[in-house]
Image (cartoon, rainbow, N blue to C red):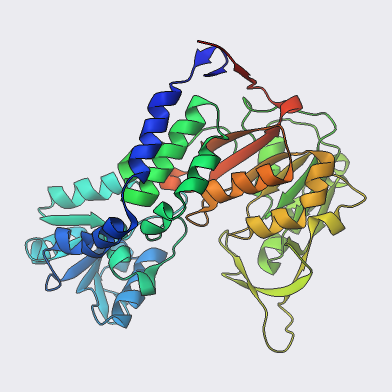
Length: 413
């Protein structure tokens, strides 16, 4: 049985939880997906009202229009939006929507985003207190109309989880501390059952820099893939951790400009150790383009057609850092993390860095990325920590044994 810091792990109980989640058959799960929204809504005749006119709300309106089932209204808590529209769909206050449609419509909470403190339970309570009879999260609706709504980050069809049950069990075995195992199970439940309430609140520590997991180095060679506007560098500096070099990769032009501006504000002794590069980490050299430019969620898609000025140069970490080396690798690159790891396979095997990689951009990254790292390097410890509400900014830490603060040992009953 594993012991962490002297605490015995209830391995049998945890194994039963995993087995219980994965025991549903794929066919049963597919039937559950198809029926979930009809169960809560009472059937296809129920009108739909969305709560939340942000990015997800607008995306949902467009998707429902494509399947000829547009919402009759979008409610939002921002008074500045009341009386406006999303296309032809009116936006109103939650109170007005509840008064008009609380008895007849199904209210779908279309608020699910990184940043802020909102959780589904807040909106569910608000709508019930306003008298809305039928309230659901976005998940059952997305499952019903998966062809136009999914995948959306970790939200995808649950049966796809069950199809990878063996891979999930193998990845779960890599995690040895209580918090990580509990987080893995909660994240798995969310992917299977859309259990928003079961997700933990975020850690207060700086993202990517959990102080309890790995030993600091006074000669840290940091590689920050997905440097955005310098937010991770700010966090690194705020902890007072020393570093010998900091390579910041950010391909988005608007983000790179903001990063460059931030670097000019740093003391010379710090700024001269930071190397900003307008490239993306990938598995091969290729030209790509960015969707969602200027945002934290900017994503790469392979360029087609004639070259453009906004094409992005993608390189492998093996090539880019052959003469530099790395002791700390952060990857937050909007779903391209597997490709970046493959492109850094030799580097990772050679330098054995601490790796902090986001595992929330796609449903299977929770188990796929730890297993991928395990295939590249031996004798690492694996941990999960959440840094935002409801599954966002979930980070997997892969820590070489020699730098681990949580040394797993074997004991005998």
